[in-house]
Image (tube, rainbow, N blue to C red; front, side):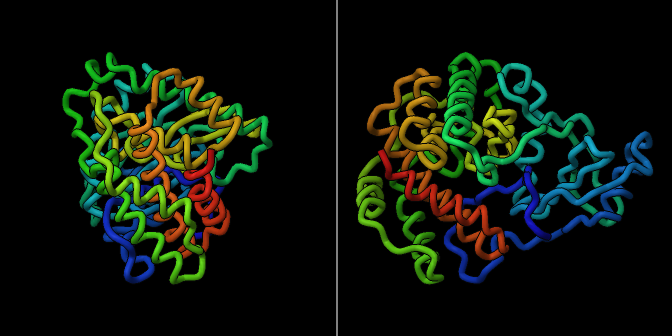
Length: 326
């Protein structure tokens, strides 16, 4: 489907570069409008007959807007199921503790008909994904400061003690630059073959440093796990309004989420983000965050190119350049 102003579902996986366009995000079960209406109407009688509008399609979920206010997420692939179950279990406890809105699964659906998996619905969070927003410099500063303040609370060690007992610890090793740097190289090679990217010495130097580095030291904190430019929502003035798609929620080094500080912001806006974050980053964590930023942006760029998402492609390629910028 065409790009939407906001896609609440895209998740970049940890797999290698795509050998054939679309191979990583092909649906095992794609819930269309009629099927979504039937599933929702059958299990939630008060929503029977409510209008259903396709909202977004991502790597792991198909999303429909029901009744103009509820966002229902239907897994497309079996690999997404642990994340769906984690969102259902943890987001209700996590959301009240954080300063930005999170999607809270208020309507939890069971497998039904020909659809074999659980699904859930939450109140629509207003805003536009950062990748789609055309913010002024002042707006980008505002978004950065809001994200930094959010991450400060999310990464509080006390929060991990409260809600993190059953969360996996960086299961995809996104906080380890020695793992992510070679994967980033593979993704960039795909973009190069497609004529979308020309090798950049600064990126090459960063990845070379990452390949020699280990995971940053320090305790794991509650982490979004997949925080990129599609998962931060902002208003027209840049105010951060919400953080979406928590399927990779885990305990991890703060670098995993701080990757967006380097992929989404640079210069004064990044400085504003880190000031609002207010916690030491350090050289090792910064390297890990920058390497992950390159990987995520390269993966998103390949996805955007294969699915015709021109604004996401531009934002992702810009994110690779920002990841090595001061």
